[in-house]
Length: 130
Image (cartoon, rainbow, N blue to C red; front, side, top):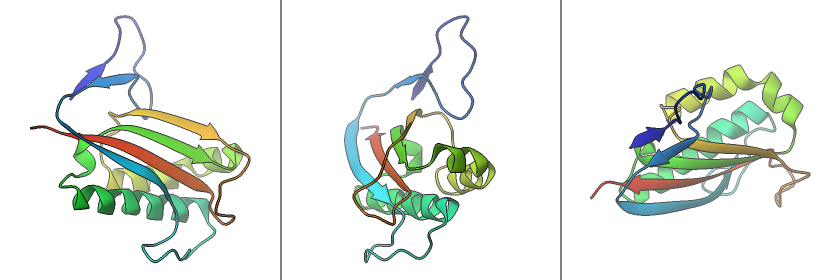
C-alpha cells in the first residue's frame, strides 16, 4: 500500500488522504456495536466502536484478510461531541484491533442509524495483494 500525500500538504492526524493498492477487493458492510448474534452489550460509544471494529476484523478474516489489508473506512456517528470527547478510548480500541492509521478515512455525523441503540456504524474496503 502506498500512502498518497501531495507535496507540501501536512500529514493528516489519524488517517491518510489517499492510498494506492492493487489486489483482491473485500467490501465490508456497515458494522455496528452489536455482537454476531445481534445483541448490544453496551450503550457506551467507545464500547460500541470496539465491538464494531471487532466485527470488521471477523468479517475480514472470513474473506482471508486482516486489518492490515484495510484501505478505506467510513464511520457514521450519531454524536460528534461524544466522539471527540472519547477519542482517546476510541483510538486505543482502533490501535489494538486495527493497528495502522494509514487508511483513507471519513467520519460523518448522522441524525440516526437504522438500529436505535447503535451509536456508530463502520464500513470498510480491504485489498488483499495477489
